[in-house]
Image 1 (cartoon, rainbow, N blue to C red):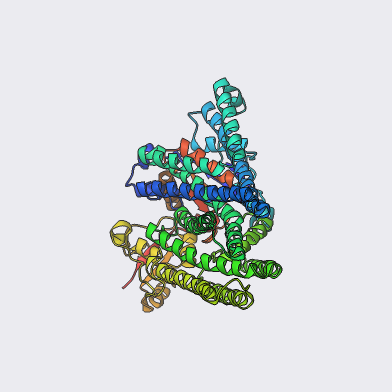
Image 2: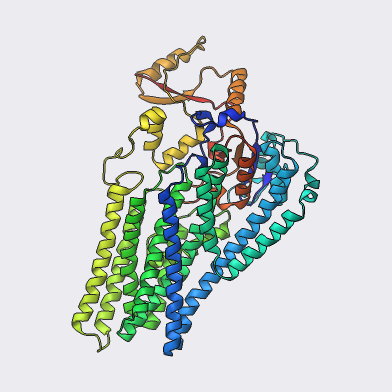
Length: 615
């Protein structure tokens, strides 16, 4: 079956896995790319979401309260600017959130109707029914994306030829009529409810509450419903963090600079001004750290981030952004025009730097450029990693430039400040900027030296790779896979889909081909410690039997005709909402969690590999 997606050609293969394979402890039931393998939802996760709600309400309420105070004081200019930086960014985020709801809920309601019309169908049939509702086409693998469009129709035709045929139910066209009046009434109520919520600027609040509900359901239910709720929780968490991160840098960051500039310009600090600025700063630091945590939790090729690391990263960004915004406010209080020129120039340089780095975040070229422009706004205030690979050099360059800019902006204010500011007060402000940046750098070093999920960056090459109990849980292969760099791990994914739990020595069972003995002697003279080679037993019958048995254990497989995006980008099935729909439909109709394969992890019929250890 093939679903037409916005990002890639997708084929869904249902292997009719027995229900007993979904029991915990069965290694065949654990997919390689699956959110179902994540850690269970805990009370600490619930508290984190509640704190995020508190930060959201604190930021918005203090800004509105301060705007009302400006209006009552007669400061209409400050009232207008404060209100604009609250309403406009919030409206932009609400429109985006409602657009996502329209797409998701339309597909979800259509998929539910199709599933109810054919409850005894296979997972692939249900996925095909949902894909048809989402404007997908069956048997069409030719799709537009940055990568697949360059390969032409030949590769798409090859994928269509290799796809597993799926027989759909003839009752699918009539499923719309099975939806009764109660279901239509519930649908109308949900549309009205969501519309009112987004008009009241409370779309994020609903998403947070929905995430709490999904987390509780994933913890309380048994294995099969738990997997479905866990997938939905991961998707909802990804949406929340993307929306809140966008809102933080469109609303909280400008609001923070504005309020600090007003305080410095008026040479007086009102309690509400300090409260609003503090809430905006906390919101910025919170959302950057929360975004990184959810992004790591969504990827099975990355270790999750502990809450100690999240709090340390939040302190790192809290102090560095604080020093940055204070320097901005100091300079803007004296040089308003030049401050605008500086901000635009810095944004252009940073955006060009990001584009030159060739990021891989979105599904099309123009979406990628828009994403780079948004990240350029983030780079005005803080560091944000958008490219895979070692980031120490790029981070050092960014913070060196930031330090020079902070020193130059603060020195210009100190030199040309007004007569109302005394030398002692000016020195205190300068020391505040310097100490805040130093504290932020200190917490950054603490994070990377002791709390980074991949291990300390200043330790040995293999330090922090072997976790306690890793050998007993995943064998030697699990330890080696944990110690690989991201690029090495991606290469491993291209050829190995299910490494063995043990590493037995391989012995040839047949007669060697003439000339092979000399090659084996030359190879053994090199004394390799660990090597991967093709299996000696590679007869077509054995390969077919092996692949059939492994597919019968793995259950439904979603093959995506795209290479897997490298961290720190989101996986395609988190960005492309039609892939989300396919996964959720397979989760509800299959006994085993669907296995997601990207192009780099697909294996040909003759690429069956096995490990071999030699002494």
